[in-house]
Length: 434
Image 1: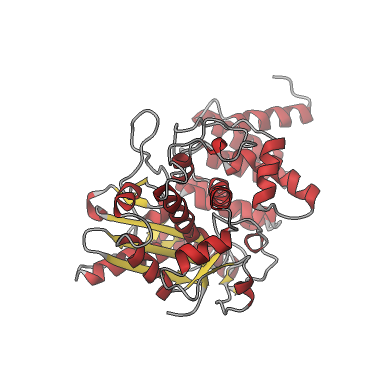
Image 2 (image 1 turned 120 degrees about the vertical axis):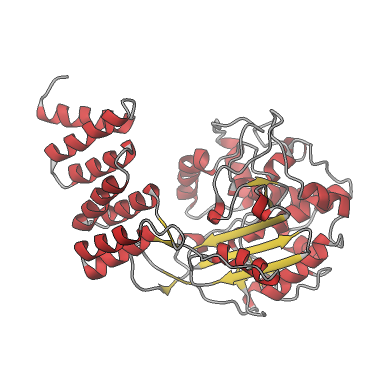
């Protein structure tokens, strides 16, 4: 209960609470444009509410390459202040307009932390400590950048170093997640006991007004009036819409429940709350375990004397580990025999593809070819699967076989640009004119 864990994205509700508190105090309006408070922000149409609900269009992916170049020039990952400097000097066109579509954004929550500092006049760690941690009685919670971080004990994280690795290792501070210097999106450390206090104080109106809580957990809408639906099924938990700092379930099985979760190398976290029954389940894990999110739902079921559902294992990851430790034949037999067991296992084309690329990146070519080939067998109508198989074959010099895979990809999807370019590349190298 009192061991502290890194929360990863479960830190985001704290940022949302800070913004809602400032709204309660009329120091800002949720429908205000961010540029009103941060004049150098180069996107005049983005509102505070859109940032809170991941519908602002601010995309980590759209900014990724330019931000990486900026960080390389500075010699370190960006800080919140540097993020503002970067955006002011390197405006990038986002693919999505504000309010057009839900798109998860870590950078959006970093901007919200900047807003908290700007409006409150306090550093983010001091604001959290004074207006959230202290009134909620959270004595073992802190921001990693605060002086308190050096005084507190926190669990060490363990994870598989590769998607196909058979054993966990201790995750050290050189991992990318642990080099971050920004906050608002992550980097809060807390305990189960403290998070229970947070839930109690937040949902009973002690931290923000109850009418504000009701607005935060209602679910937001896009500019076209449609619900701000979360298009990715987070953790396989079910369909949700985004509120203001929380994901709210819309399916009948989980109606009345909301959650936020987090994940980073060696850490998986979730806080799940039933609004009608006022039940809270919190799980903090420091070994990157599978099924944590589903286990939170099982926690609610246990509280209500209901049948639990198995937490599904990732069959692609299991196949990768068997491929490394037991060989191609036995690994393939294991996957084939379990792929229909959708109660206990999950298998996706994307997971198998990622496994293949992990092997390819580590120059484990035989394993990469085995994974890509099996993926094509499992998902024969996927043009992307055949394209990836072709890419692996081309990389190891099997150009003729690669060409066959690209042709199959284009047969399934004539506008697959990657396969088109690959064939042009192969034909150019061989002197064939098309």
